Length: 331
Image (cartoon, rainbow, N blue to C red; front, side):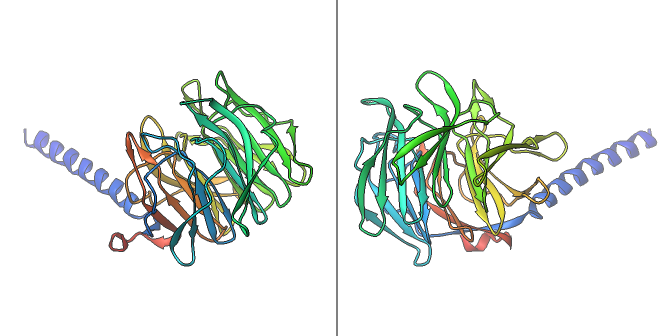
């Protein structure tokens, strides 16, 4: 009997130690989130966004009642929001944005009140605060696509066309105002995926299709326009990064995926090192879990804002410092 009691006590202590180790592991994650200026407009999710210099631009989206077309800029240096000229197209959510030099581009998306999925595209001149319609997206109507850019061209692919998820990719040439399909992407169909760019390489990850969160991870060489498949996003021993409706960004040569949805909103953050093709978990987003946020990112700094948790729409804004220790007192 005495040995039996001793065994039970040891088992209980072992469980406590395991829980303590797990908590310590979470506490030991590096990275810190700091609250910044709250968005001036209405809380929303599924907005389109891009960054030019140290200014992040964001517009459209859905606020639980209406599809939107207002357009805003966030200055990273002054921590200040300012409203700009409205997006000229139909109100929408789930559109895509990218920037080439001093010009931003927003197009496609969804308006369930009128036209459902959309294919129109527009460019924004940051110097003059003016919009101009350009050629419609070459792949037809689309929502939940991903977009990124090189120094000369924009790229848009995947998404949902109203009938099926897609896996095609298209290049936009701003000098010719033309779209051209790019072959070679061997990944799965998906919607609500994410991307980030490190140097001359764009990385495409996450998303969902047929109710399955996609695990494959791809690199796209912007100079040769060729694809390379990398290690999957799920490893039973080390990590599980699969999700949809997240954001991707780059800080000092490393890529990040933050927040999103995996059977509900999540707040985990993962860092990718292209030199090793490995992922490491960083401190989770420190406010409410969310999906479909926006990110402003100049390669040195990153700000994650807005989004939703269930039917609760958000207007907060946080900056991420990947090498700092987590600090609860700065929020």
